Image (cartoon, rainbow, N blue to C red; front, top):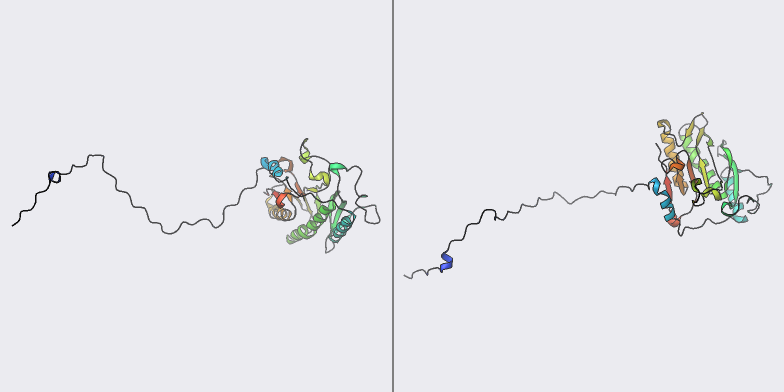
Length: 269
């Protein structure tokens, strides 16, 4: 019988016991996921620029913005015809449509000249009634056409859905030769070239007066519909919540910006 070989001396030495504190912790198992992580279907909407960023935003969209083309006699005649077709009633002393040069006032030259100005105070609705402005305004024809269309196709029908008739647009303003917000040193206002319109409210046939800047639960739905229609039609809409200069009225204009950028800042409460 062959004897088993003896182990080497180092193999016969017992292994040292681990010292306290040197134990290697056992890794914890990674919890199993019940399924793939889900992301929101759509990201949350970005907030509107804060009022103090208004001028910064305006400046960022100025560079490379297309210039509003001037109206020659042919373009002005076509615009006036469209304005009349949309119910607009121009106030003029001329028996025939005036030319672009005739309609440019000597007092409105340079930065305050209006290309193809129109003065009006009435818009006739398709079913007969007339919506009046509480004072006549002068704006460029392209804006007059858009305002007549807005009153005729947007405002009047939405008021009719609420069971009454739009009678008057109140607190209106048009051409004004001044810088933005009346601040010295600011860029020239769109009002200076007849490309802007201001309003305070609406007067209804049932006697109600809706102040667009006034928080009122009874008119909230109407004012929200007015805001949506304005922001869909005009390039700039500034109202309460935009800045302190528009806390009590709504400003609308057709200012063109780079990339077709539009601005709608009106907090309806």
